[in-house]
Amino acid sequence: MNEAFAVLGLHGPTDQAEVARAFRMAVKGARPDLPAGDAERFRRVIAAYRLIQSRGGGHPALAAPVARPVALPVVGLTPLQALSGGDTTVRLGTRSLRVRAPAGMRTGEHLRLKKAADDGSDLYLPVLIRPADGLAALGDDLHMRWGASPRVLADGGRIEIDTHAGPRSAWLTPGLQSPIRLRLRDLGLPARGTHRAGHLFVTFFASEDAPSAAEDLLARFTRVWTPDRLAA
Image: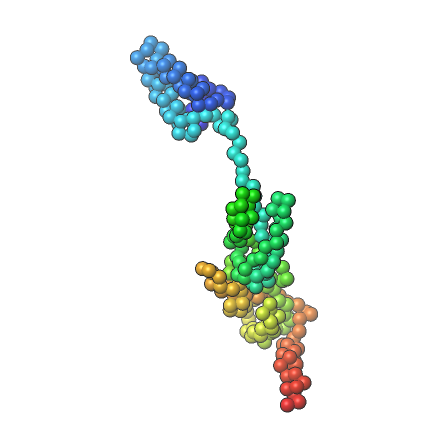
């Protein structure tokens, strides 16, 4: 574009009227039927003017600054709030708004606030699910880490995992490559709209403090066989 302005003899800020005047002078001086004219320069002047007109007709330096839309606040949710819905607060200018997100919101979706804009129209705020409480959301799925004894990870065995939906038992087979990851079906974000129900992916890491397989078995036994059941 700068080269096109230079062909017309323009340097610095201009407007459409100035471009038109420069074009008339340049094209007149380049007319090939005049003694000082030149056919090649004549074609370049016309091509430069057409290029400038196609881009708005003024020099970029003159363009009024484009007003950027005000960035909307992000509705930050924890994975647990995304699972079951929950209240959160967003700052909108000088206002603090208490909003309720329905269960099953995903990152990238928008939450509608009825008549919350200054002109009384609806606002659509982007949603971001931030990692919290040992959980992270990715699309429809949730992810967590869980410590297991090195012996169970190496030799395999039953392991019990405390999930957001309660304890879940799983069997690890020996010889699995690290990192070991397990999928618990349908324990991710709930189905909503066009989104399917997600899964919970558990990545295991070695922990000397984690209970052994025998301790896991004892914990499950004591939880199921309560004193009332033993007395029966």
